[in-house]
Length: 209
Image (cartoon, rainbow, N blue to C red; front, side, top):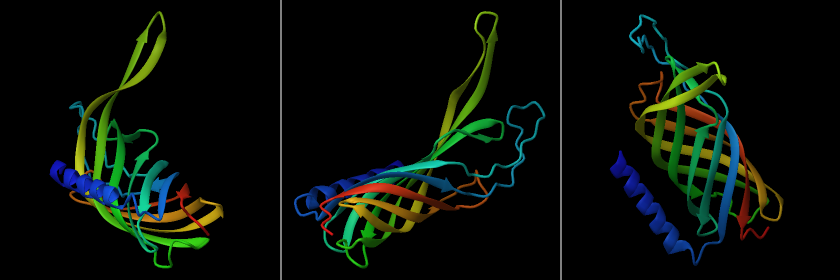
């Protein structure tokens, strides 16, 4: 997993370095949406106390951020990450998923229009971090809660995304989009196919329309 991540990052940085001088556009964006995965068939005695926990469905509010370099009218490369804003519950624990990917970008109608369809495809990984919820109470400060990090689970993923940039003013745009993550051996959930729906706000440096 770490080897694949390193190779992907190296390839992306090489492409960026090679194209900086000739890039027609440089984009940065952020936004929000949600990613969904069905619950796994799970019967877990997490704490060994006889309490059995079932599977958990992925959902909730996710944030997204990323950037890209457009080398020609139709092609570019980019990288992005999406993450759950708050920790979710999982078998008596807390968890937070983070998706990251490196993509080739195709703009089938070109990059110099007011409405720019965009297709992304690439690879990356998913990191699931698990936390143990703890509560503390004493006579001086009362009760408080905290989450102790336990461990992470890493998975390889393939990514496909599609959206349409709608330029508002100059290089400022909004882009509703749908992303599909195929996550290898995603046994913590009921399916390795994870759709993500959302929208981003971005800015294109070099957009001339």
